[in-house]
Image 1 (cartoon, helix red, strand yellow):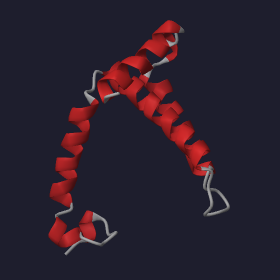
Image 2 (tube, helix red, strand yellow; image 1 turned 120 degrees about the vertical axis):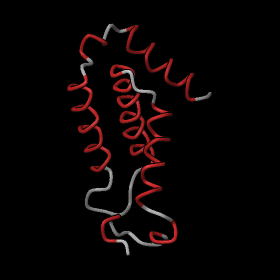
Image 3 (cartoon, rainbow, N blue to C red; image 1 turned 30 degrees about the horizontal axis):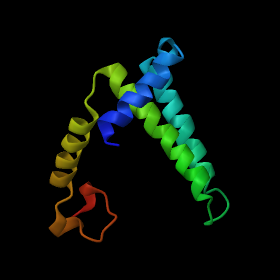
Length: 107
């Protein structure tokens, strides 16, 4: 299944349940944050983690991101590619390779 089909399924799931009425950008942003915290909880207290639980939380985050992009009229693929280009300019390979420094600290 390609990404367009996945997006259609996410949107259909929401439409079939008449949940779009609750999906304001603000509510979706809150939901993304809440689900991200639940993903982080999978790693709390131990480097061991339950891959199934982490996968489910990651899927929740992605679903809400798809819904938010749709609600705001954002093309996810274009947004990701634009951000990669911006990050590539901030983090050129020759300066950032193997470094975790922020772009403002690279020399």
